[in-house]
Image 1 (tube, rainbow, N blue to C red):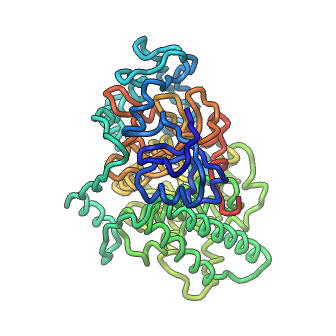
Image 2 (cartoon, helix red, strand yellow):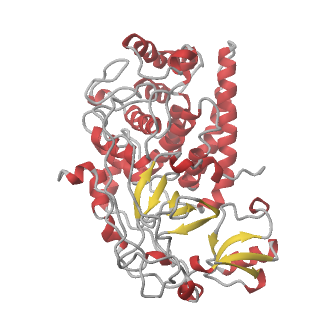
Image 3 (cartoon, rainbow, N blue to C red):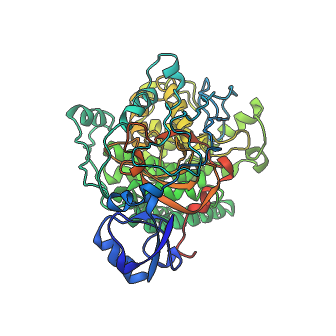
Length: 520
């Protein structure tokens, strides 16, 4: 339903699906967006003579004008949940330690009801609604258990059943933090550290270019550090401090942008990309807790350097397919001490960073390594690093285990709270990431597949997403940015919601295809 329209005739509420020039030649970094104000129209006039407007994705008057000609998704695109993701296992796995195999979690099959199953030739009237189905229950919900993920998702359907917002995006104030919520965060800070409450300073679109540059420089630095260490060179702590400062500033301005870039570029950020991803998530976690910038910088360094000791392990051991033998796993454990040895050669290296690296494999019940610390013997930084390291390992492919969806990874970590991870910190980590973290591949109840781009601070289960396939799971020629809180498709009692999380690579989708670099 795309229509070619001169930019001089654009109106607020129109959905721009394509331009008359490459997207990277314009300030509109993410392909497909809803015109929300006159400033966007002026920018389009400056850069384009005409654009393609998709009225089926437009809002307000532009949306109403398209309702009588809008068609439903093809009948053949039945929604079938068939996830091969692992269920929560008996103990957490780190980047070098596979979890025990478990039977795949069964997802309910969701079929269209007769009232919403229309042939593609029948157009939709304003009274017709999108197909709706109950979201799949978590293991905890099915068994009557609580759990943080279960509590967050048990009310998923109710959150969607609201009256449609008229016109383009409305102005919504972020929810006010209660004194109890503030105290819960403050109780987790190291002794003597005063916490703050950060607010986003810029939008995701504004911050993404700077986040791209940070990821590129950090990746190049990690590769150089690895080579220098392998050749017997010194550790350049000044260079690390420089990129860490940039990373922290980007996270403070808007954490979603850096998480988006790091996740979409995970396939091409060098051999030590795991550390970069841990650094981004760990710093964003600290921002959520309200830690000062100096402590955020320490967290960023912990994430970047926690696995640097693996340089001294045999490559064939790190790349072995399948489960490690007990003696091989004992050898892998030595990477923690190798990391400390490398960093300890640097004079006056931050003791907080060394402690976090030393403790990121320790577990609350004493089952971790290298020292088998228990409970309060593990510092806050070490506890946080353990949670984030495990999460990043689960959502990425490892030689011995397939990646799971971000949702499944969070569900597993929630199940390990108390025994292996500090329960209050687990709860805060889930809150900081959202049930479906930025960069997650998700399936909507409409059958479309999308990538989570940014969270709505008021309604965390209605994020902004980039829709990348149709209901038939075929790639869209023009991926579309949709804010699920204001998308006209979610206005009725029966509406579109996030059906389930998907593992990276589902339906043959490469997240890297939806990353735009300045050089493209």
